[in-house]
Amino acid sequence: MLKTGLRVLLFDANLASPTLVEDLTPDVQGLIFTTKLHGGFEQCSFHLATTIPMAWQYLAEASKTAGRHFFRIVIYEEQNIIWEGRITDIVLDLGDKGVGLRISAFGYWSSLRDQYYSDDDAGHTDWRSGSHTADDIIKEMLTEVCPSINADQTNIQANSRDIAGIDLSARNFPQDVIVRQLAAVSDSDNSIWHFAIWDNRIAYWSPRSIATLDYRVQLSDTSQLALNQSVSSLRNAITPLVDTTEGTTVTNATSLAFYPRREFLFTLPTGSVANSQADAAETLAEERGYAAQVQRFQVTGHIFQNATGDSGTSLVEVPKWRVRAGQTIRIDDLVPQTITSPSFDRLRTFHITKTVYTADNDTLTVFPDTLPRTLTTILSEFGEIEAPR
Image 1 (cartoon, rainbow, N blue to C red):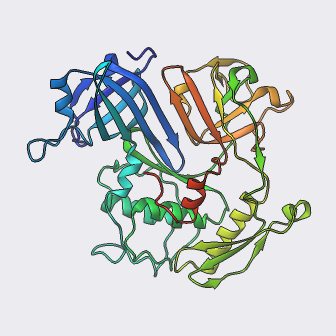
Image 2: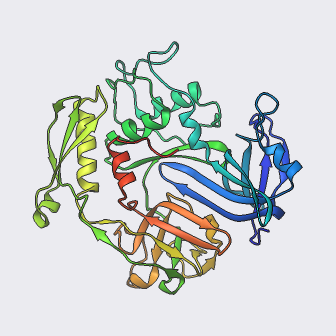
Image 3: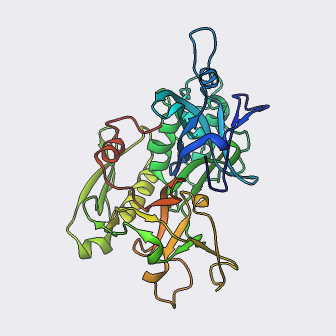
């Protein structure tokens, strides 16, 4: 039984007019859910104690029934959505502990791999001519081939760089277009842009920001904390590469004053013009020009928010399950008391790229700034394997 202040509700697959099927909360065990950038709500899994007749309602039986695949799972704290997604995997477990189901769900970011997009398809915009920005492309893809995503596009922020000339004629999933092509070229402000699907399947597209400090922890409330700064991925001389043509190399002068020259050919989408190439190279030279945080840590104790804003002195404890990717967190013990505003120093104040919340032991795992450099993440960056759903 779920012992936290969370509720797990199951809805049918009708997103236009959803029907509550069941409150699963009393029978949920081993609940784990994650958030990530890009993506938003990423993955959720749990064990569901049930009976054999109820279990068969979840399973597909050839042409007789579709089971409960793609049914909507929503985790609530009171009326606030903490996680939302759709069921993808159902395992019937007939072990010694009785009948149970192991349920896995992915957030609606995964639906951006349901249908392909090509700007050659009827009714789609030819982005190779005219004047267009990245947000224009995202809005069209969501409207045309992403029916599971909410039509509310007010949180897709406008870009400033005209990226007309980009060739999106090849059939690709919108997820890949956003991550490997649109986010890759950045913008004229040289910010890191992220895409996510959050509450009520609403899309968000915005530059990384640490203007607000969201959460604060003490060292005594953390475990497995080993802040590992690595230069294995440091690159301070970036050359944009479009097809087989190299653009102008951009260097990070500050990084070069401290470290050896480390070069990188950065592949950009076909049709990327000179301004877009420069944006991408300058952004990457700044982002990759310094030692990067490649570790994770756990919050096992308390986590706090300022009650009166970042400069306030009154702290209020909040549940760990509220923390999401895209927010900021500071380890107070590592910060001099004179510092009152957040600074993205990758040592004490972090932008969160991924969270994992484990309900059984009320533990939050935080992945700060740069995800650990596993073989999977390295290969996915270079397009050698399919990115996670």
